[in-house]
Length: 620
Image 1 (spheres, rainbow, N blue to C red):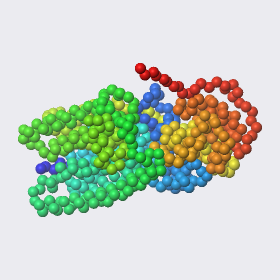
Image 2: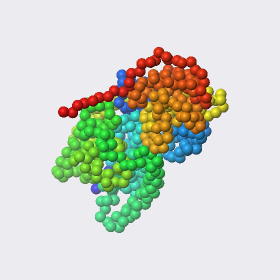
Image 3: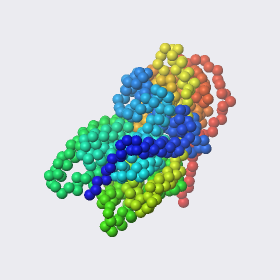
Image 4: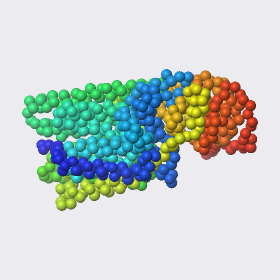
């Protein structure tokens, strides 16, 4: 059996294709994320599915602001401006900061990369360069992995571009999900396993272990699905290991010992990654989401099979799962041509065809898992996974398994090209390039980047910080509207508080401590309608909360039965609230310990239409 691993040539000629590949990867990023390059120092991506006419808008709430806040906080800790390992600017209900000490991974090492870039260029540039670096390294690792299966850079580079162009990657990265960064570790993991199994090198086990460990630190679900895919890639590598063709028992035993030693670092480091992942999941016991996800929750988030093949976007939904017709056609054609060559007995590495078959089956399996309850036979695979695989019942967004698909598809397409290129004759080299161009055009039509322009100041928050500084006390504030803690609207409060280091009662996390919902949201939710009692204000002051801030433009219908005007009127006329500033729809108030005489304002605001409507239907 012929070994399909050829190293690239040394010297300038060998490095040139890599440089060209990196330039092409940079070009893909620029085109796919446009107009981000135009706003690279002033805005960060907010979505891959822009819904408004303007592609760049100021302060769009969402996960991107939440993750940017975490990156900023890690940078602030490194600078010594914020206490180490303490998230003191959100969910800080006072009266001190002890309850917000949160040891954890802090999305390392991407948070460290962000901190390094932030030293030179500010928040927006640091975020964008960190995301770009993640994409470029994904290309580098994928290209290195593909080169172990094909001989030509003309094939390896276009195949690696697929891994950074598939729409799901941009749905995660541009939407501010840590998975968008963490997907970089998948090709590194597979590359390490490949080196360990096929070459028997310990370095491969170390690389794979480090990749899985960093995946656990960056995104739990990328870690989870990568760990599940690791044995499968080990099988792919085993099929291509040169020593598996040996008929000598002694040689087999020697190579088996080398394999065990090579994988030992991977097993040890993976154990540490599992402990890290489980320690973070232990926090769920204290939250409202400690139980397994219901099947209906997963069904609500699951994509439709048609979304994987719809040339015209059916919706700007939560997941862009489009696979594209170019990779599908290439893989099917490669299977057909390779199968005919095998049947005809023509010269061809059998392992290459077997690998293509395995990767095709893997692609089908991943797509079936992504469909979740919407999969074949009423989601049979999903139900089996929930029963057999530990912690699978915690998966809500089943499409996140697609994090492993770009690498699988890239190698599959590369192998398909090796089957098809000889049949193309003198046009053989042009086939991958032409297919790659069509593929990139096809993928780019499914991505419409939306840019969040970051504010550099917020006068209402600045006024609260200055007011507290004059009084010589630490500023703690509560923002209105008050949410249970899992609403993307709260990401605005996170960002503005970070500009002035204001400790906020509010916060934004995917999972929130159940005590926060009970003791804070339920206790003070009447503030959203402007109903504020003296007892509530006394409790806030006891906990060190000295200010309120109202966001007029972050007040959707579900917040209150009546519009924001009623809430604002109540706050402006409250005898224990002093208005500090109104800055374009954001109002800052200081809480007084005793009522103070106040002239009534907004007396003509006496008609408030309900912010909600009700429907009734008669069933016949």
